[in-house]
Image (tube, rainbow, N blue to C red; front, top):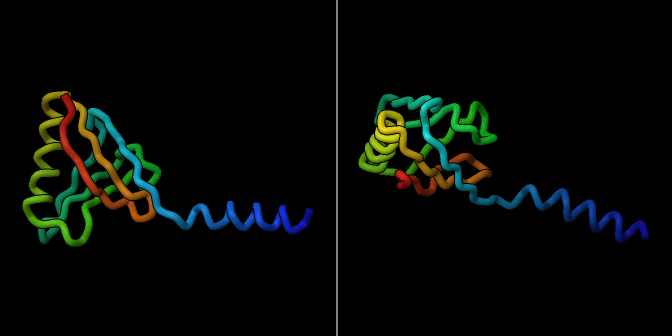
Length: 101
């Protein structure tokens, strides 16, 4: 019985080590959009469980990717449209994004 309990505990402990992808969809009225020197864009207060609700693009994202993210969020804010963001839970990196509707 002790072996089964130990096995179950180790499986639970290891399950957090695997990253997963989550989609967040919201009208971004409360999101903070921050543009850093060098063109990096970060989203804050998104409702994600990441620190401060922060999400950002991967290190390899191009300047065009950052510009499109900025434009999508601003369009969602001004038009009241839903923005979706698919992100990696392990490092809060945005994998995909866009406008819905």
